[in-house]
Length: 334
Image (cartoon, rainbow, N blue to C red; front, top):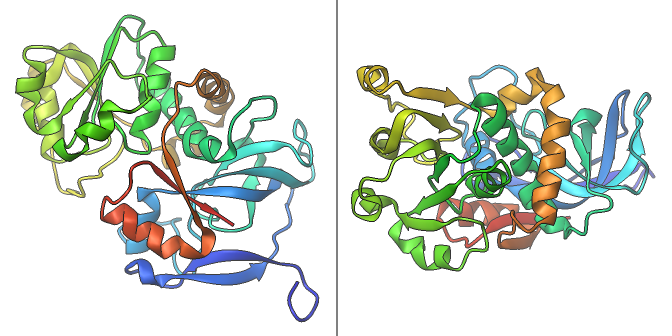
């Protein structure tokens, strides 16, 4: 409550585009759900690269994306607080995860969401931190592997940036879809961490020495959240008629291009998957993907380290993410 008796919630706002110092703890009016909406008492909110890019202003000229002041945050876990008119299939107090349509709203003690972006985790013995860290990304990974491309049973998959937030969802979903072999790549400095990961990779290799590590091995699908020069080198790792699935650009090389003649000659398919653009246009993809994600999480296929900081330390979380000073998924706890 504020001094006038109105209900408020704790949140973090990006007060301007800029460095992590623009992230400021505030109190904001407690949101109520409108028709078709759900409000959630947040236990954990994820911190991801999309939050960093939005805060830096990389997408400031794109219509419909956040402009300051705004509350960052794409994914949350928590319990249903209230249901708007017309919402069924959920109950107050039910454990859920949710994904924001525009990448905002998560860094708060209460999150308001379209009900179609809310996934119940009730009945699954999932730690809420892991649920927030893994389940929404696994939903997106399933959609990417079944709709942006179609991963077939027995195929071989290579995942770049193997321990990254989104990349970490792909081996479990690929295993569930019947992939025969799943290899990850990481920078040399993360090989020791990779050796200890519980994620279901068959092998994780140095991205700086792909030829030495992989020899002549080829893959049916390469999942690339990294971009830049690694994206170009991936073309040589694809089997005939292989698919290169672009799911991010952690390298920050925004002007990078691929050689079109090499794509033509190799019968190569290049597919982009941007969850923020795809899911609003195809909400019907979410229920099946959610069921798959929950099965994968319950089977231990999505287990990844998490680090939880207080909500008020959102700026420090961004600093850690930008400096690569993390060993797992970063979350904020209101």
